[in-house]
Image 1 (cartoon, one colour):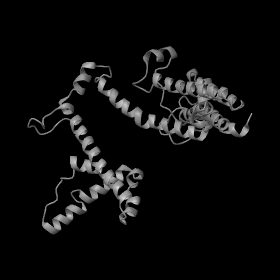
Image 2 (cartoon, one colour):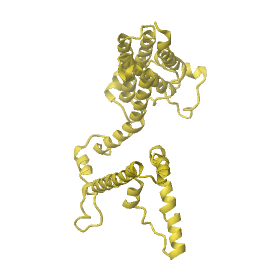
Image 3 (cartoon, rainbow, N blue to C red):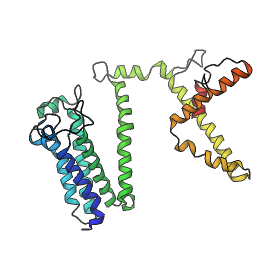
Image 4 (cartoon, rainbow, N blue to C red):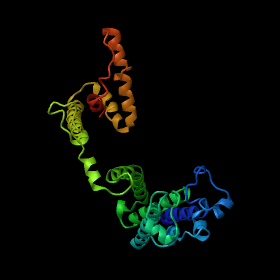
Length: 313
């Protein structure tokens, strides 16, 4: 065994097992950011650690997470070959699927699968806490190491872990909330799937209306979004072409300034751009105040519309 190349696998496996044994699996009300005492970790119904949940609270559906981490620990004793990669990838993916599957299937109050809950003898369970979250992170890292051992990312475990970790956060904080929001369009007030109601929402005049074309006040959101996208694409193409020409064909000193300014939108948070434009062109912005002082033009809300959003984009 190459102890150096397998050290990250060993460390993440041990971290996951320690988390399973020592940290509360569920998010406890009024105790989310505080660690529990020994008595609570062992005997608490919802505040117990993952191991105590399995042994004392009779929640065997948490066992696959521990088995997957033990498989990762065993893989750390293997040579860094494709065989090790297959073990790590299988352990990581199966463990992640088991943890997420039971979490969504049983669910928090007013959610989950009634059939599975009845089979397991439990109606609901609290949301994920420190234990479940860190165990999931460790299982994702084992999956990333398995991908690297199988040849992905040129075998670089650090790059693989960074990519898989970033993808996991995108799924949790971006894709999942968006999909949950979209799913809500297909549900009625009782939470049941209602395709008729979903069609009425999707085909709403507020989305597809063409009132602005036939003399009405406004068009639907879809057409406004499409128009904004086309205007933004045209504007940025023209601006990018001009910047490229100045950089490549000009000897002007402005080139040095542009080299500093051009990358700023890439690294600047979007709210900074929005706040800056509002401070400049908003009703109480510098430009409106200057126009009122110099020409007596009363400040208006002209910037809060299509033009302002287009300029920000």
